[in-house]
Length: 466
Image 1 (cartoon, rainbow, N blue to C red):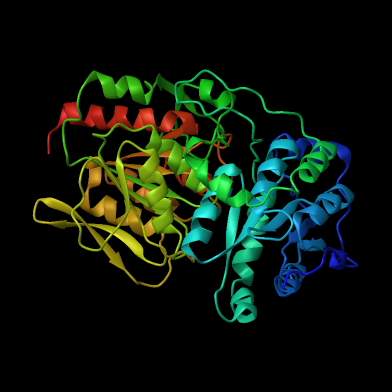
Image 2: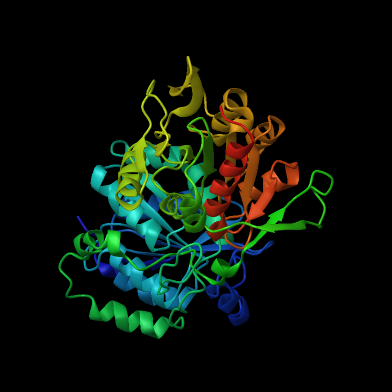
């Protein structure tokens, strides 16, 4: 049963960090990370389940660097608690009484952007709603177990804490900007951030009967892109040379043509070319931005995105409806074809193999690597061995270091390698590790990656046919 609104509470600890001043709060609202070194991460938990709220408090307050400052049973109560506590991170249930989590998230990100981690059920509809939440600007999500909720949530404790830490460091992109193509010249600025505006907006929405359904029905035409910004104007390919990796200096290389221009010049010359992509936190929207810009005759693409089972099929189907290439969840043993992207299923490693002259998908249940299955390192390692210089590797936004070592192996095998730059990352973790390791040959803003990919594939096609 839903918990009544009167059960909302504030939660404190004796070692609580100091409340951020107005300047730090304003900086966070402008897109800068909110969680600073040496201070506690302040979390507000919003969930209609009293058990989930209790478990989130238990998990979060057990960590040395974070605390729950308040809990709320629904967004209407959360609205007032946000004003009172100015939390660094919000955990938000998807389906709640009085106001739907998706509708609240859309208004929050438009009027008062802040890091949000969604709490979602492991169902097909839950997967679709979660992907919509990530599109609206949520940083990440936590899956509620179907059975044994208490034991399951406590088993996820380390993962939940890591996701909250990553969210506190994330760059938040305000909603209200128009979607721009990689070659577009800028974006319309969103509205000013205002708690009072959020309050008014939330109050006016109480009469909505089913906002989740209406939000989902509009997903394909949504005009929000968390990555559209002045970064779209950046057209310089920043290439890191072998002798400057790990230093502060980078060399500016040639301007890479946008995807549309490259695609219109000549057809791709070899079906043997391959692109491998890895991502984690913030990756669903980054992957969408890259794949959506590719032409129908693009090389085959293998994608590992850190996701649990039950979400990757919905993710693939959503991309398939948005992209000119065909996108599907990868199946063991299937042939890899140009014009197709293959998403690693949750809880299975995706690797590249050969069957005669053909590339094929291999899925396996080996132990997690870097605490992940699927692992980006596992994919990149296999691509380095099997495709070598016929591949291009891309590491996108995400926390941790999964994929950095594998990208280095790809570069050493002759592949061209790309890391997303810090300014366009939601979390600059995996790309940073790759750059510091010397694995990234080019460091690019997200808006330039798809065009650069095709440019590199065509350069390789002119020099050799496979």
